[in-house]
Every structure is written in C-alpha cells, then in structure tokens.
Length: 503
Image (cartoon, rainbow, N blue to C red; front, side, top):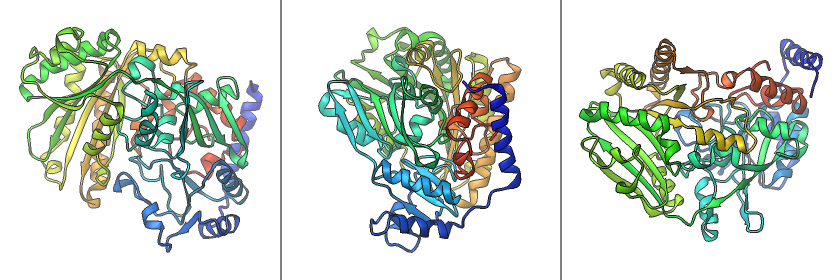
C-alpha cells in the first residue's frame, strides 16, 4: 500500500504536469508514425482510405466522431506497440470495443487515433475450468453464439449488439444479475496493456487491487484486450416478456414495482425486471414491464411479487414474448432489433432508495418535462425506467471479491433515454435529459431517498460518475492510478470517458 506522503507526492506530480500543459504531437504526425510502425500490415486507415467509412461506425449517430485515423490491432502485442508509441510521443487516442456509448468522445475522438478492437474478437471455452476467454472487441451476440454448443453462457449485455469491453468495465447489468451480481464481478481475469505498453494479467490473485479497480473503472488504467469470464449453466429454457399496461393501471403497477424492488427480486432471483414508461410523439404514455426468467415460467406458481403483473391483479396486461422457452441469445438478439443502431440517443441516470411516493413523483417530473414542443420533434420518443438492485445481487458480487463502485445497500437505478431523428435537436435533447435528472435528484433528496451512486454505463455526458463511488473506493482507485498509470496517460491522452477525480 502506498503511504499518504507518496499519494500526495503523486498527485502533486500529476497536477504539476497538468499545470504546465502538455505538448501533444499533431494527430496527423501520430497517424504517420503509427503507419510506419505497422508498415505493410493494413492496420492503419486514414480518412481518405476506402475502409475508413465502414470502420468508423457508431451505435448512435449522436456520438459520431471523425478520428484522424483508425487503428485495428490484431492482438494484444499490436495494442502494446501502439500504446508505447502514443505514450512516448504524446499522441491522443480513443478506445472502442463495440462503440455503443451514447456520449461523443467516449468511444471515438476528433483529432486523434481511434483504436478499434473489433479484430480482437476470439471466443473460446475451456470445459475443464468452466471459463470462457473473450476478446475485448467481441459483441455479445458472438459470445452467446460461441457458447451455445456447450450449454453455458456468461453474464453479458441484454442487447446483444453491445461490445464486451465498455460494458464490463462499466459494471454490467445482465439478465442474471439477481443470481450472480454485476457482470464485472464474474470476470475471472483480464489481460491489460498499461501505459508504456507493458502487458499484465490482473485477477483476484495477480495485481488484485488493480483488478478490483477496473470493475467500474472504465478506461482509466489501460487497454483491456481479453476477458476470462466465469460461465453459468444455460440448459434451462430462457424466457423474456414485454408486458404493456394502460395508463389507468399506472398506480397499481408502481405499487407492484415497489413490492418487487423491496424484496421481490430477492424472493425469486431467477427473475429480472425493468419498470419502464414510454412516450412516442403526441401519443399517450404507456407503461412497459420488461422481464426475463431463467427457467420455465408459470404464472400460477410464480412468486407473489411477480404474479400480479401477469394474472390481471394489475388491470389490462398485454404480454408479448421476446423469448419463449428459448436461449439468452434469442432474447438479446431480439432486443437488439428493438433498440437498433442508427438512431440518435442520449441518456442520464440517478439512483434512489425504493419509495412508492417517490416513484410517482419522479414519473410526474418526467412527464412534465416532456413538453409538447419536444413531442413534436421528428422521431421523438422518450423512456423512463426503474431498475432494482437487490440484496442477493449485491451479496453475489461481494462474494466474488467486490468492485470499485462502492455500493453498500440495495437501491434502484433510474434512467431517462430520449431518441430523435435530427442532429439540429441534439443540444435540446441533452438539455431535456439533464433537466429531468436534476429535478429527480432534488426530489429524491427532499424525500431523503437519494443515493449518490450513478451507474457508469447509463451516465450522461455532463454527469460525474466515479466521484460518487464513495470516498474509500475513490481513494483506492486514486492509489492504483498512481501505481499503474503515474503519468496519467489514460487521462491526458485519452480525453473521453468518465475519469477518476484528482487527475
């Protein structure tokens, strides 16, 4: 453990470096140097290359960037060589696994090099250890597909189009969370390229403090090129439902949501529920419950916290399946179509402690802020949701060594997500999202039900995330930042993403 004096000295050096400024090498020169380093290997693509357009793709056009060049490494050693060059020459760069971030600059860059990990996408399974090795450039649809023949799966994205890397380092909410905790806590080990190009393996037994920090630590410590993941049995049928309710059932639905959030998820951890509402254009809002179930699902024998959503106790349910006695791949592939790439999105998040009256208040705030002017925008739709994080979820994560997120008690993740068609409306949609979040936070504080935690993968571009992990976690992350990236390469040279405070 570093001493307090060493910590203060380290912060002083970092701040001193920042105060005097950094002379970055021009991105054009960096791309030229990278091209020389990988001469003849067809791994560096400029804006004028025929491959650039197909490589420079993003899940949402609202996050589209124009890097000076795109680098497509084939393996960890390629990444190591590039990071070593960037560190030596002060070249700015970004790291992209799947490019699913809502925020411009998080998985892209203007005037810099984009490292696209898309070619590092191998997926293998070791039946002896029960571990899956997954390249950081993989997408979850490919991971689930590769594991199907073995009747196993991993904790991964609920939308199969998501990339592996950003999802896992952001914490990762999966359909199996109530049984196994955060997806990040089901990582067995990682292969990571540190500043300067050094490659190490981090796990609970090797570089264990760093290993804990990357679970919720985003891109602050290095470029992860491989994840070794714990697997779970997938021989049970997998079921997924979308249950629509009319506006007349909102109060009953929110009461049911409160019951599920305060014990229902623990009573039946095979279930996983998101309580959402949506407004499309000038149409009335609608309530939608999204639920998955790991196993055969029967309404009559379901737990008391789940049954009312299906048996008519809450009036007017219309049940649609996105997987019926199927597989996790079928469910997540279906959801990737529903939430397809190519649409403009943004997002914002907060966390609260479950309270029925607060649920109603937050929903009202969202509806008030969704004005007729916004509804008239081309392609406008907005979603507002509650995602409970229960005791068994947190206990499962703690049993696997914990993470950097600093969570101490059950809570509810809240998020708002608008979508729209035109770039001219981008700023207005971000402002709308920020207003909803700000008012909801104030309401939660007034009700004494506010949680400081913010889930990184739902974080908006104007939000602080890691600051809210709590003082002990932030200090641990700062100490390990000084240990593994003392010159703050992944802060100075990687401008995008949520950063560790103090650097």
